[in-house]
Length: 454
Image 1 (tube, helix red, strand yellow):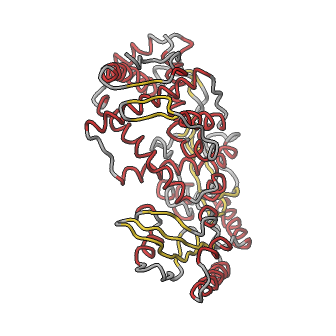
Image 2: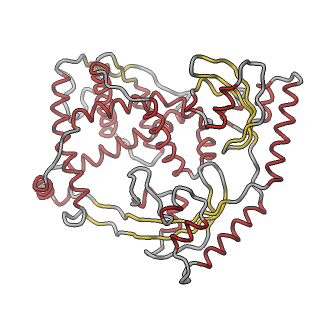
Image 3: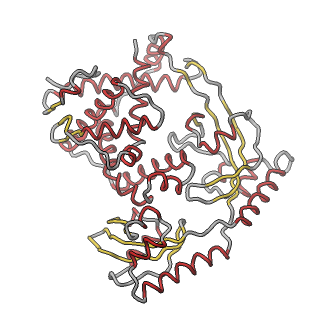
């Protein structure tokens, strides 16, 4: 029985398909290979869809041979079949769901590269552009997931089924469980000095005055805006709704009545903006902006280090625990109220697979033992703020083969997935019989798990 190995490969492929859309499209931009390789109902799969995914997987160190290529193709066939059926069954998702999932995935990517600024630099796009470009992709994926949930939503496994499933696995099919960790932190951010804030404001105000006196907004955006993604397009962001923009920007932009008015200076988490309305269409607007960021103040960074050192020196005395120090001093709003304990955004728990940990933190905890606390180390948040963090390793497990007694939850999940796969396979068989599906000769010899043609 090869279920566990094959299923693990499929889960890896599916995970990367879901979380690598931006990477695949950005890296192959300008070299997209077109051509329809499959039709499912009225949905099509392009050769470029597959090539983008392959490029994304390879860039993350995944070896992609013919077997993996066929797995990617089959996942796309399944997704298109789900979406096609979702339209027939009127299955939909809300814009709020799409936005929430968009933010979750961006948080994941930001954690991988270290900061929002680095993500923008890597893709050569602003965060707003990244969101706009891939919103429809994520919407399709959510619809497919919702449709799949209607097929398998009521499926459960009993403890006896879980035990029978585990006992049926050959030894070489029992999965290896990676090291898992729980981590707490105290984050001290460098403050933005009044001098740096004043300097940024004055620079932007002088640009605004030049526009008011007649110079072209778009030209000055190209020359001076520090939003690298939009600057090259004259500061233009494209049509966006209120939820697509940070609150401060959204409020100011939607108040603009005409295309000749230039907003007053608007402050957001990214810095200072001035905004011009280009066009309004219903509940969406197209604007351009010029962003001037507040420069890092080396003296404030030094003060953050000194404060972090002082907090570190309090650790180990009998007055305050690490959690109490986090509550009192940490600038991380997400963890300070939970004793500094970090929550994995992918699972909603405090447990992280060590290989999926933020690289900034991984290198700190790699050689630590549970209960140990690191000295203050440099940190950079998703929006580019610099500072210092103190890390406490709460717990750490050793890599091991999954055991029924200690890894029951994992085995239960695998058993449930196996049962769901059987139901999905039967569903695919039924829908293939009544759905128009055409596959390119290039993929007809793939060793599919399901029969896709009659």
